[in-house]
Length: 155
Image 1 (tube, one colour):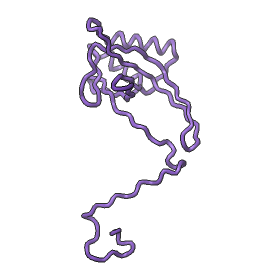
Image 2 (cartoon, rainbow, N blue to C red; image 1 turned 135 degrees about the horizontal axis):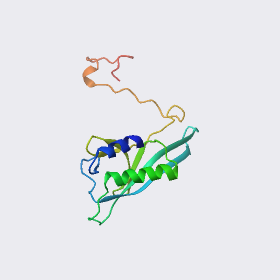
Image 3 (cartoon, rainbow, N blue to C red; image 1 turned 30 degrees about the vertical axis):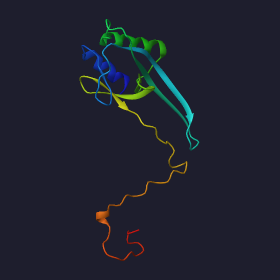
Image 4 (cartoon, helix red, strand yellow; image 1 turned 60 degrees about the vertical axis):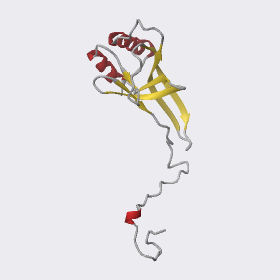
């Protein structure tokens, strides 16, 4: 989800809710403690230099049950961040504390912002020697009989 999409969603909401991938909601007394741009400049395992940028929201649970973050307040924080930090319309990454800091993607279902699982991946599979995945065979599709001839797929 891009920053512009978050802003459009916030304009239509009366309250903000974030839902974790397991379906539970982030406690409604959360705070957005950071809005920023993260730049990652790196070399992948195939030797390609890469640059990635995301907008980062950091969610934090405080013991402050009397204050709730309202959509218009988060919208003003985002707009200030765009102005002061020069943030563009990038994809959103959300940090949220679990056993360690978790990094999530972001989607919106019309009611809640959904924190989505992110996965690591090799960006240079064709360059770094990762073998292609072997095709999976189903036993039900294997030839029957007692003979196993070359090219028959039985072994």
